[in-house]
Length: 183
Image (tube, rainbow, N blue to C red):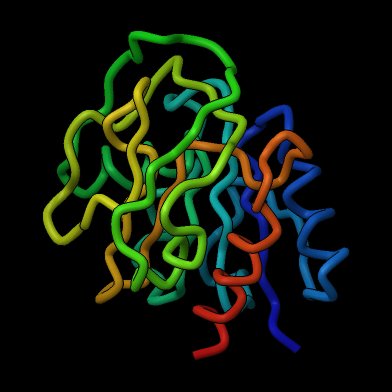
């Protein structure tokens, strides 16, 4: 059975990420973001959202584990910030219902949602510049980088929260990530 652990970066929806995976029949465990990488036994990791990029524990080390990683909100920002992209404050700010335009129907994470999907997202902070190796896979009227993928390294990010009911096709994002982890 595929095992996908959720790294707890102290976000308000983190428990919903674990529940969504468990409800899909995925073996999942929530792990603290200070867990040493050598103690992690999983086929993939979800870097959860959270309130503070200064409280991400060892999340950066998990990017070097040769596992697929899905960063959600802050999780995506951690990936971008660590790998040479740029993160900054969003003009829109807090949570909102947003229509995301999906740009690449071949993308393994969000391509199946092409051409667009409705999501629940926070834009207090957002990725302003993609790191090298990443493709822009989604954008909206309020955020230029709603999703990104580096298929060579199996690193993916979404600004929105696929685990909440307000996101129309959130379970499909998790299903697609499971498929990536099973390859």
